[in-house]
Image (tube, rainbow, N blue to C red; front, side):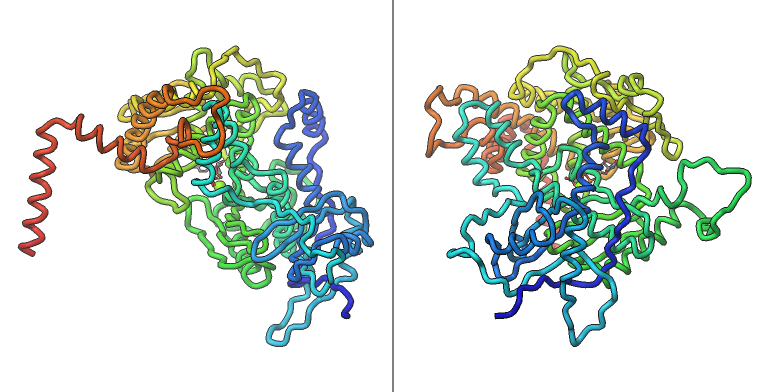
Length: 554
Ligand code: CTP
Ligand code: MG
């Protein structure tokens, strides 16, 4: 039989420069934060990036993923962690104990000869395994694939119906939906693989995930938002000396920073499109407010958005992460509200006039600040607690807030998350959206500075409205759904299962009913018929008659 071989998909330069360690000041801060049992986002990012650099992604075409496969790989170095998942066949993520393991493996890896294509002399850590017979009697024995997407909503509804309390249903939903350890590793590995491609142009760059992949509010299957960080090269934030050597290539001038971002993304986009292993459907969206590249990374199945020069978004990611770490109810409520919104088409994976997950998250945070006593502090308070090392001003925006969790004193609030969910619906069912703006900096609604159906102040770029895209219809749908859901939840209280009654075959109750689109919709129409004054019904009848006659006459 043929000798086993791992094959490089395309040749892309493996960048062996160690992940850039940031200033020691920050690392020391991070250590003091860890003593509190919670890691600050910065520590987590550094740790995950470093693991990713020691990892390879292998597609196992033959399905031979048993003991023999691992034995074959461990010849190259100790394996610290591995797991399998399915995306266009079996794949494995293998993390070696050191980078030497990866280097040794790549040395023995064959670069395939392809007749109809000229190869570019780059190397990559995306490999495929061919013709390795399985060492096990049953090739898939002991092979457990880690899920990379959420269970279908119907399954979730069934699962939740078995729980004994709404609180437990909310915990269960959060556990089902949130990003797993393996999924997080895969996200960082994809960033690291893409960094290898971008490093062909910018050898010292890093690619960092942001948004829901790392802010603690991501669900399995969410997009992978990344940003290309060139700060170590561009000398951003570095004091300019009066004399000495200056590098000419850095001095190449363009009209604006935006133009630089656009041209950087443009070349990286070309590079990914032509040589990026596994990258398909690369679109350059360079005229957006925040220019980006959008593509699918096929071996991981991630829909990717790559931006550059997006430091404010990194700050809002840090802030959301911090809020999520402060109290377990924060994430639970956000997951529940996001899942509920998705089930009823309030949010969508397609961009449009609807409310985004980010907006919804900020709305939940605002609601939690408005509890009495508040569950989370305002952003202004977090800024007051900041130390000198936390100071951050980005493009004129003050993004300073405390990074040390131990400095944050929480007020004692013991409300259950079930109660909070109910109160959330009531809160937004009656919120004066027409006059007021949601503002987590102040933790208090503010007069709307501009006309927009829904105004949520961007926490850092305070002149911007996070939900500028939302139209009146979408806001109305949200408000109506809050009303229906609040009503439904109160009906359901009587319907809660008695202790010990939980078990197979239960009809949906509690949170499960809230996730059933038909249930909520039918209440809506029932209530509307009841509530609508006769004049309204006559008006709509006249309206439809008018439309009919117009259609006939045209
Ligand atoms: N962001 C922002 N202002 C906006 C939109 C986005 O600052 N108006 C930042 C936020 O940090 C957000 C990140 O960009 O988390 C990514 O945006 P997006 O992908 O829209 O939201 P996610 O939080 O990643 O949620 P999803 O799971 O829907 O992708
Ligand atoms: Mg996202």
